[in-house]
Length: 309
Ligand SMILES: CCCCCCC/C=C/C(=O)SCCNC(=O)CCNC(=O)[C@H](O)C(C)(C)COP(=O)(O)OP(=O)(O)OC[C@H]1O[C@@H](n2cnc3c(N)ncnc32)[C@H](O)[C@@H]1OP(=O)(O)O
Image (cartoon, rainbow, N blue to C red; front, side):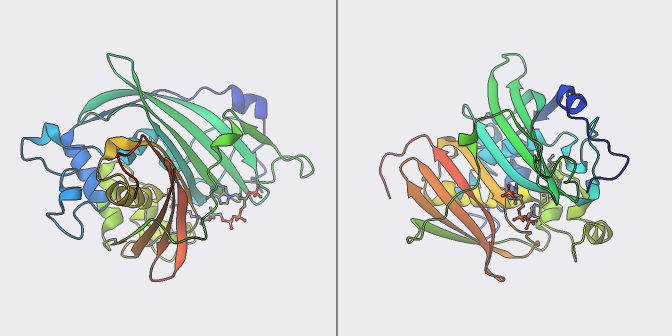
């Protein structure tokens, strides 16, 4: 249950305006992010992955992984948001889902203005689901580059509304549901990659400094035996695998990405991503090999490929 000082006030909450944030990045940030999601982590000269880290004609030609844009949604989210009319324990906050739309090829450097809004809040009884939407515009041209919808799973913060009429608010169509059905057929492709024991320590250098991923004491307070991997790092591994196996290595074919974090990943574990190509949609599921446990599932919509698998 939400704590007693947390009088739920939907009018106050839904009227609340979240502040704009700014993001500036360059080729170095792009490369550090790619290393953080395992680019060249198994093979330093892998031609499918080197292009995200290095370019022979200069770093301005480096390619940007589409999941890089998830960094623009971080703002103050990683430690939780201060919201009027709704209180929760930020130490129990988990990343539940991420939905991304990329509208045009990503430049290797840019300055962006991020417009942030509350996209959803649901009372699930034992937990609350909080969704924040971030629309990122290129400074100068004001062109919309991408949109992120970040879902927080707030353990212990549910039960703030009537159990016979749970509170549910969403400002986007129900067709954008992120829960996918995994096909029972053989996957079109499978990719296996080992994360490093230091993976979260490297990934956090891209700007997600939540100590849940680095500090053993903070991890224990959050009820984990040791620091866990960032959900967005696992998502980065999975989408990089799909670009390699299905998109012929071309990151600009990725239009939409959805992912639901099903279970926690510990740095050092091996990720196996299975993918099913269905028209222009790739359904995927990532499992931890050592525990045979599904940790992430979702879909990727692609812009079109010259031939099918
Ligand atoms: C504001 C956003 C801030 C985000 C940043 C927060 C900082 C943390 C960063 C991280 O990276 S944390 C690491 C990545 N995340 C994880 O490791 C989470 C992995 N997932 C889980 O551990 C579990 O799935 C869960 C989230 C604890 C939920 O499991 P549980 O068994 O408690 O739920 P259920 O009983 O199955 O379902 C209850 C209810 O909630 C819906 N639901 C379930 N999982 C999710 C999810 N991942 N995202 C969104 N919603 C979820 C589920 O559909 C049920 O709803 P109803 O069907 O009853 O309506």
